[in-house]
Amino acid sequence: MKSILASMLLLSATTTLARTWTDMQGRKIEAEVVAVKTDRTVGLRISRGKVVTVPFSTFMDSDVEYLEQLLARKGRGKLHAVEWSKLNKAFGLRVWQDNLLWDDSTAVVAKRMKLQKESKTDFMENHRAYPLGREKVLGESVYAIALYGGPEYADSLSFIFLNIGDIPPETSEKIMKDQIEESGTRVRDALVSLLGKPKRDSLGNGNLREKVWRWDWNEHAIMLSLQEGKYTALRIMTTKRADQAGRVAKLTDDELKKRMAACVERRDNGDVLIHNIPMVDQGPKGYCSPATWERYLRYLDIPSDMYLLALAAHTGAGGGTYSNEMIDATKNIISSNGRKLTDSGSTPTVRNVAKHIDRGLPIMWRLMSTPAFQRAANNNTARRNGKEIQEKKSGQTEDTGSGGHICLIIGYNKKTQEIAISDSWGPHFAERWVPVADMEEASFGKMNIIRW
Image 1 (cartoon, rainbow, N blue to C red):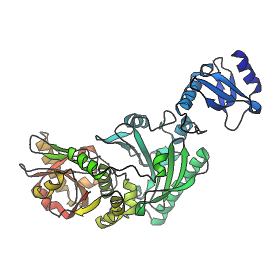
Image 2 (image 1 turned 60 degrees about the horizontal axis):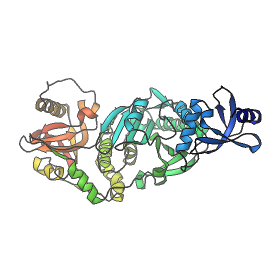
Image 3 (image 1 turned 180 degrees about the vertical axis):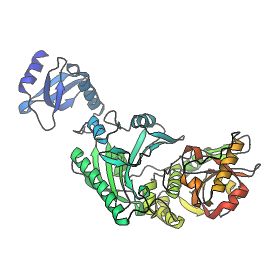
Image 4 (image 1 turned 60 degrees about the vertical axis):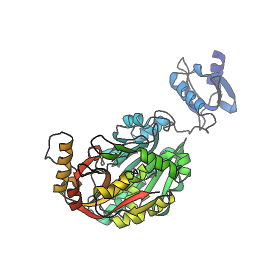
């Protein structure tokens, strides 16, 4: 074995795709991997095309770990020349622990990236952070980070660098547009220097379709979306899903009906409640409508993103969405997934909501949110949970001011004449119970459901 190493050291020469290898004696060589074998040997190409075969055990632990990863990838394509550790360094985050993110637990990835758990249901899990420009990814200020996963593993990741919802409304349209354009250009330049020239691709369809620059790294599609004057976003998902424009295999009507019926919980106190609705925290901006629609769509197993929904519905600077524009924006994605949007009247009585809740169908409810209504919701929920009523503000803009708002109706109690609502303001607002009289007084416009 020593003679083989000696020969390699004498003959080795740096090649474009070569790696620096270190043997157990600390000696270094430059060579390119030709093949890894199940007997834990590796064929290395050194100078003049000569190939030598040596055992994994010849090298230091870091090289052996790299070879193990190559071995695990046999039959899955060639490993990208850029190593995962280099991506982590460029991103400024511990996103990867090896060359594949998609076999990592969602919670483990979130812990590495220091993201807070937003929600976990029987079918999905998501974590989020709002750095609001105080941290950088790829050298650019990032405003929001979201990680999504299925029951076990991570399946997508997104970074929002700059968007209309996070720019002060008093900023001029031209300055806003220029800032977003410059942000996207800097991110693109950083990725080009790291992964080379991208190809053009698209995600979604209809008015929720966006053009992206795409880089494929191992089994990851890294896609940059620069929506003029609206936002700069980076999305990472499996290459297989990206090849399908971001779509996933959908549930059949029967499968969906069965799943949703199983999500209805009946409590001893008379509460009837839908669980397994994911939380999406809209953050410190007026994205209640996009966030609520994302929650409903994901509950129906339809991938969605509140920033893309906000773009399609022409959400204004700082937030604010007209309900008819959001309905128009989502018609295509709803119908293409075999579902339909229907009205459910305008009065949130127990009788009106029960027929939908019993089938596992949440209701999108529009209301005029006021401090008085929010106090009533908070105080009533605290009282029924046996907790002390607190008058302090929550810190959520929509919770402390007056204006049009949308949330989900997720339950009812016939005995107490209360209705359960769920707001897109984080886990603390996932379940609040409101007397019907307060609901009727605040109701503003139609209610909607998405069904098969």
